[in-house]
Image 1: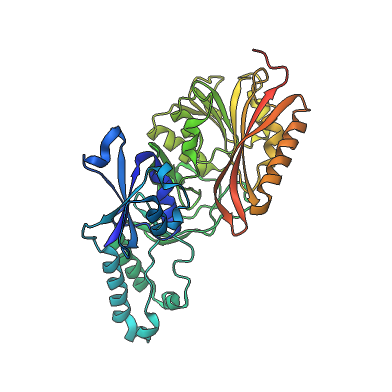
Image 2 (image 1 turned 180 degrees about the horizontal axis):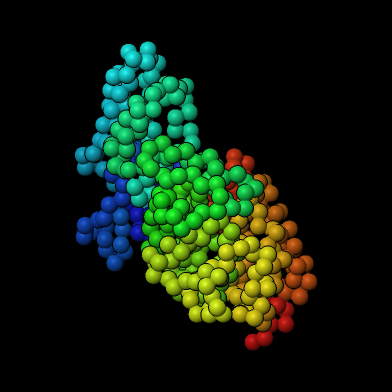
Length: 430
């Protein structure tokens, strides 16, 4: 018997991410709707998140007991409006079936490859992420010594192994995740490892229309927004606290600038929050293609800079070049940017001078600065950044730290953070 968590719909992603990081999320049972009952009262829509934590104590529905059972949550469960229930439903034991397949496979090939079955008693991977038809395994999924036999297999046997895994997971493609080189401005996952399925040819030159058509594309939906990307050439980050954009002040009918647009992680959220227009800059052609495909799925109108002809009526304007030209490109187009997103890691500092020249010069706005910062230096770095922006504004603007969002770990010693800076000219016109 396992526990499940009942959680308000708007908190699903937050709790799910915590469970995934703690290897407690039940990939096969996943998230289910709740039938109308006493848990659905007050018109609060809720869901059940199934977990892998087995029932080991007598359960009482109190906050203290909840925190004992799920210390990983590290939050006020009362504030999150979470209840824990005993998962009395019979689990679809796909994990057991997958484990059985792997052991049967090893037994079948052991004689041919002279394998010691006892040394190949393998802990089946329990953690992966499903995006559309692709399962993305963590980079250490097969890193233990017990998996070394994989490298000795004939290509056909290795194909049969991954084909079996794909069958039990229920996907057509499997790949192994990889870290992005920290100083690569194009954010290309060069160490991404396709394991099963046709991901298309590897392209080293500038991609053509045919290259885009032959590539493998993944589509997922988060917070009611579609995202599209080709995993061999662009990254996708689950969560990233994009939903908080819906709570930003003065987004409705505002003009936004996203200086590192990627596939539209933040640009789409601004448009979903009723922003009037988002100006985007991106240098990776694969990201630009994903951005345009995503815009189509989300029914956002868009134009690339090469197709503008001085027509800026669309919701999404995509400049296919470095943001170093941003001020020149917008000089005669708009002077009332209210929010600027600087979403490059580990640092977006090169674009800070550009950002200070783009904000609405009469009433100001907000600059959202992304960075990878050492845990112990977050607050000192934030204050230094505030002072740097004050200098860039030549001390003629009031720069205030509104919020520090801790997104997720970037490296063992650093966090991805977002600093929301309110920037108001001291001679603001009312």
